[in-house]
Image 1 (cartoon, one colour):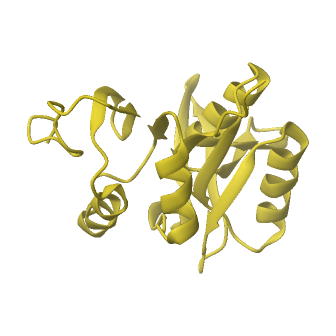
Image 2: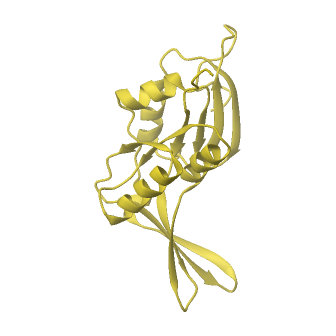
Length: 177
């Protein structure tokens, strides 16, 4: 059987801290992390490209990904790992993000570029598209890759796949932006 390159998943990995007034529960999460784990659980190899700290939370994130067989290309996290604190007010969740989450960065070095280039598809979830510097960095790794499809799933979320068609627009396409 032919070995398939992992899907590249770019986005967030964090600790979800759930507070209900009587207890606190911490779970490994993040939309991109959940996509990568879901793919692996479905039998699709995946590599997550995300910012993960060298702190206790980062250790939990790394262990969780290892347990599920998800590869990780971690960007430096000078403020530590991202955390989302969820409390309930009138039954509705209210989220507060720590400084690391608000200032998260994804670095695109040689390893990340190679993973993206080799991937049969790249999924993006909760990438900080509202950060001009991140968008500049985002555009850099694609080089001459052409893209078959771009499907926006919500703010900061999309799935993209490489194209063999010479008529496809280069990423990011003018119409997408």
